[in-house]
Image (cartoon, rainbow, N blue to C red):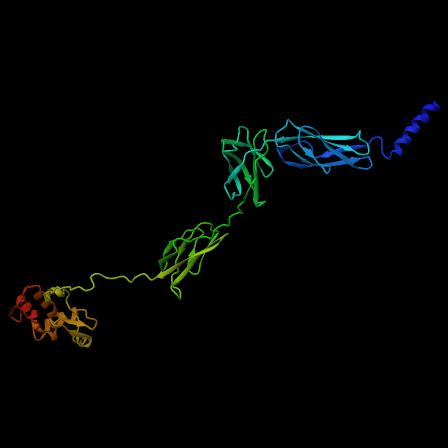
Length: 384
C-alpha cells in the first residue's frame, strides 16, 4: 500500500515538474475546414495550451500544396481530393492538431451586375458571366455575405431577389458554382433615398375675374396659400372681391420637397352693355277729347292759383311743371274758351256741358246749337 502511494506521488510530481497540467496540453488550428481556389493561399494560426514553449511545426500530411512555418498555405495548381494540414507541438510531438482544406477549381468569371446603382428596397439582381467560364446548374449568388435564392436563367445569366437597405452605400456579390471556387466579386453603389420633389403648380398662371374661382393642382402638396382671396386644401382658389395694389395674387403650394407657385392676374368684370344703344320711339297723338275724361269741378280762384304751376305744350294742352297733363285745367280752360266765353262765370255747369260736347254730342245752350265735332277741330289746332 505504501509502495502504491509512493508511485502516485512520484507521477504527480513528474507532471508538475514537466511544467504543465495533465488535462490542459492542447493544440488547435484556425480556421477550420475551408474551400480555396487552386493556386490560392490561406493563412493559418495555431494556439498551444499547457505546453512550453508554445510553438508548433506546420506540415501538409496529405493531398497537395505547401505550407510555411508561419502557417501560410498555398494550394496546388491542380485539384486534389483534399489536403490535410497539421500543427505539431514542439514541446511534445505527441500533441498535434489537423484541419482539412479543399482546393477547388476556379469558379465563373462574372462581368456585370444590374441594376447599377441599386435602388433601396426589394430588388431583383441580375449577374452576367463570361461565356468561357459559365454558370452551371445549382449556381448560387452571395450578396453582402448572404446566400440568395438564385435562378439560373442561362449559362451566362442568373438572378436573385434581395432587399437592399440604405446602409451600407455599396453591395458586393459573387457567384458559386457547386464544386468550384467562388467567382470574382462585383460591387455596385446603392442609391440614397431620393428627395421628394417640390410641388409644380398647374396652371402656372391664370386670369381670374374678381370673386370668381380657379382650380389649381400639384403633386406632393401638404398645404395651399394665397396672398389675397382664399384657397381650399384641394387647390380651389377664390379671387377677392376687390383688386390688389398690383392686380396680381400669388398662389403657393407647399410640400416636403419645397414649394411651388402660380401667378393670378385679377380682372374686373365688364360693365353691362345695353342694346340697342339708341332707339327712336314714336309718340301716339290722341285727340283732345280722348285725352281727358273727367269733369272739372272747381272755382275760378282755384284755376288762377294753378296757373303758376302749368305750361302749355305745342298742341295747346296744359301741363304741370313735372311735364304731366293737367286734366283739370285743360277741361276747364277748354270749356271756357270753346264752349262759351262766359264759362268762367259758371265753370261747373259749362264743365258738364263741355264734357258732353267732347263726346261728340249735340247740345243746346242759350237757344243756340253747338256740335262736338266743330269743337274737336278747334282743339286740334291748339285754339282756345
